[in-house]
Image (cartoon, rainbow, N blue to C red):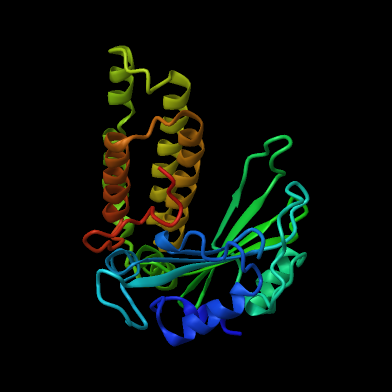
Amino acid sequence: MNHADMLGRSIADPLVVAYLTDHEKLDPVDFRKYVEVGSFGGPNSGFSLHAEPVQSYLSQFGEIRSRNLPDDQEMIVSQLFFTGPDRINGKQHAYSLTLPFHLKFGDGADDVAKALGTAPFRKDKSATLPDYSAERFVFSYAVDRLQVIAKYDGDHQLMAVYLLQQDKTARQAQKRRATVHKHKIIPGNVDRVEALRAEIPTPRWREAMADGDKLFSESDIAKAEALLNTFINAVKRATGAARAQDILAAVKDLVLGLNEIDARSGMIETLERDELGTLIDDVVRATGFKLTDGEDITSEWREW
């Protein structure tokens, strides 16, 4: 059973229709309960398929494998979910058919990476809520044109698998990682990088806080400022050594650090996001690292 072959196809594609018919047998009672919003399946089957209106799908993914309905009716398969046993939610049923890539619930993270043929490009950790959820780990993998998301329990044993096509942003990020060595970094541009330290936006944030803006606290501003200075220092070192991969790593470290601050405080809103994005782009470009128009170098890690 090729689960990934369903992605990007019309909900009325004969292959998808047959696939849904097979899966409806797992949960005939409520399998089509939310069809009007493009969702098939439920917790009693351990399976769910989501589809999106054609224009929405095109804007996010840009590629469609089949069309079978008029535009106003067309829905394109965008995501597949396969869930396993949950020690917290004992009522959750486990998917009983073959998992993608022949994975098995309970597989360790190393076994999953081996089966997928790649290490995760992103690792996240969930919060723990007593009596509701245990500690979870969510790893994302890029496999050909797919994004595979594996959810693990606290012991790093597989408990769910999600499949979706890589969206435009993810494909761009994958291409960036693969071609990072081709960027011509100019060691003599270290001073240009340093000059951008004056553009760090935290002074404006402090002014806004002094004027009564409750969005900010001195503690959060100071932590963000330290991250931004560390970022510029790291980019300067990478520029002097002409190491493009280290510039990308510095962006990642900065964005992950800012994610933590924003998750706690919510202080990065639209204006702050624009300020940070402009600064990061300017610093990266100052090294000689080429960014195309509209490219967001932070997108694969950013949560703000």
